[in-house]
Length: 139
Length: 197
Image (cartoon, rainbow over all chains, first blue to last red; front, side, top):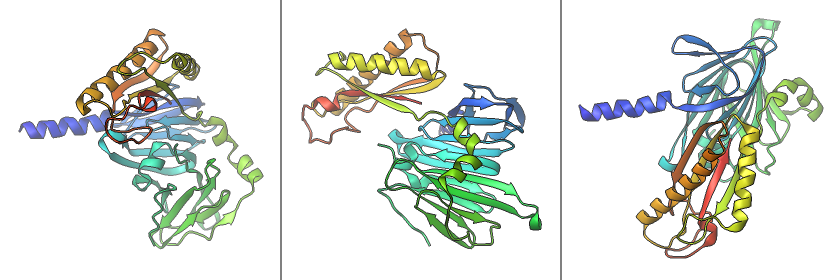
């Protein structure tokens, strides 16, 4: 029983931890979190499972916990499925998803420490990153 | 040193054939080696030349062959993305006198610079990570490194700058800036990293 509680607490930590913040914003941007729609502003925190939606003539700039940076243009739908970069525990998992719109991504520590743990899903497939020291090519 | 991979992806609905069409462009990251791999159910394409792009139409179709996009076109098509991009995070490293939480004279100036950057970048997140050299036991070093990190953290807190998250960690001798054998007094390893993002 106690083990289960510890496991749940641990998972809770991952679920509710802040994974990034809003650094810049123009227009109206909303996030869907646990069924609720929240309007975001500069300084808002982002969490795992957040769905970010930008309205027309709106854009947002986000910095993630590992120093990765994301820009989203107007009418975009972007999901942070998971953003876990914990070098002290050697735990890495970045799973992002662009459903619609334009995005620019610049990788932070994940690109150096565990590039193969990074995935950005797009409707037709996925994008992976490869750092200089760890070239892995899967065909 | 972080290895950066920059790319732009754009999903746009094209009326012809009503199929979703995605473009993925590799950008300059300032590093010599820089690559992304774009894959669908039917194959994958590796982009490692700055300014090249692939297009995708369907998950059951391989990505197109990579082609070049001019800098001018990238800049105009994706101007909004460049405009809204956050500043690159900055790292400052301050050094300590042996066996103490006292900063070296030079590092006091670096700390001031870091504090200025935190102010300029507000709201921001700051990680303060303490390190030690390899003299002394692992446990003692873990303690000293955390003490150093907490000291720097308190200096940041004293400025009353709005920081969204300020975390102090002690890595002890786990993640040395300068790899050495055990029991080596190395000034470079007695430091605190201030990661401002």
